[in-house]
Length: 128
Image (cartoon, rainbow, N blue to C red; front, side):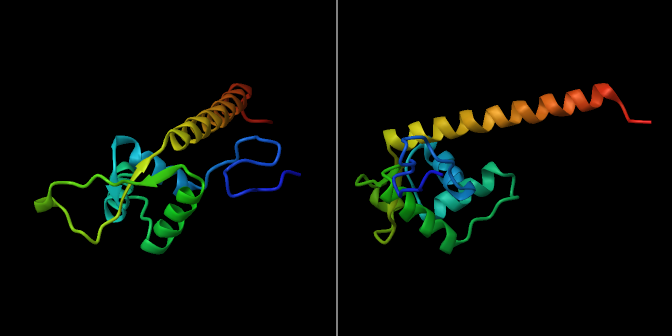
């Protein structure tokens, strides 16, 4: 059994699955840097209002992604009239984009598998 490391990889070097919160935060940052509340709003928008990530979950997730070097705190800021100095902005790193791509490919594989199984079940019809 592979032991989990905080780097997002097993000891054998295989990519580990992201949590749902990690996946959604990385997706939210694909379009550019955001602050915490902006990330929560983007996730809400992407899910058509069905997925809410609370502040506790969000900031624990952000810390894990920072520790895993999948996101970084951005040093560029919006124009002063649109900024609040208390906000911290985050952006996706190249590593984060790579892990996100791997996770999306892994998820697509399982979606295809589920669809294929469902099609086979539908073609056999109900058992009598």
